[in-house]
Length: 242
Image (cartoon, rainbow, N blue to C red):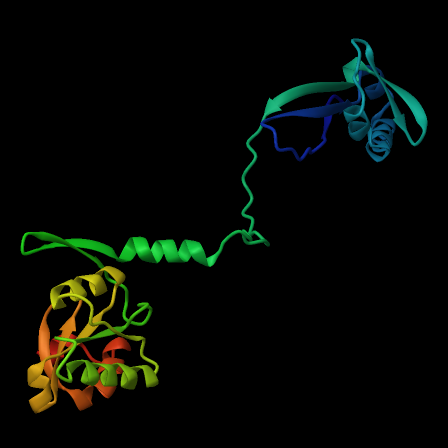
């Protein structure tokens, strides 16, 4: 009978070069003893953990002395082989259990600001506008009197208070020219603006302006309480009013 039995110790490692121990059980003298003795000796070596023990020592040129169950055993060099091999270690999919604790609301705000900022040219000038969705705009509707006198301001303040009572983020502004006020509201992302003019005093209508299209439409004052919330929540569109 002739043959060689190879016992390979599996090693888990993260390096590409790993050290393996191969225990070649048997030899010419052992084989001459017969099949039964050969199988018996193989079983002894396997149960004793020869390959594991060889991993723990540095063998010399003539062999290695290993310790198994507290007993020193000399293993001749022709019964084992130690070599290095290149192995591929596949990655393991890991789902993290901890989310980065430094993640805060400021990053989301920066993302919204970056996404919403736009510039366009109007009458030869650059218009800077924050196109916030109406639901998250810091000011959802601005209310202007064309002039801060002759009862226009009183009517505009009344409209602003009515909208505020309904939970709308409304702001009253009577400072500067009407065009400047529109630009200021564009820059802070106000989606809608209501302007009270002298015609409003006679027919109870106001001008409603859309931020993105800059289109304007006349609506009845009493409709604002229902119309503005519908526009903000997306239940109605400004284009449907034109």
